[in-house]
Length: 75
Image (cartoon, rainbow, N blue to C red; front, side, top):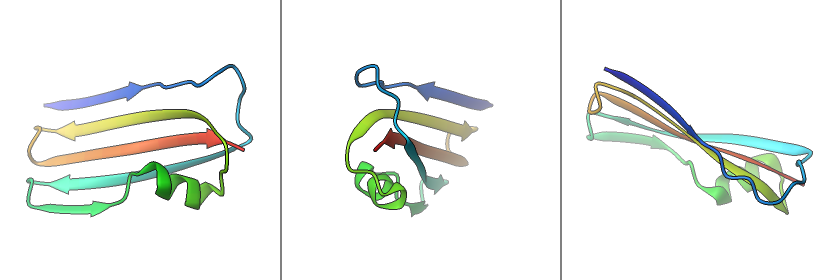
């Protein structure tokens, strides 16, 4: 019924000083909102160099609600 996953994506061993989380939502595959792109995360977090990209996916009964978030860290 409910699913939540985290998919880590480290690039190198350096931790970033800045981070940003952006999400996109989908309801019944009919209505979508948000922007979970790397470009948007870089803009929101004022990040120039990317150190890691992590993806979080949450869903409820698969078709009713889905949230796709991207967490970006860098400098």
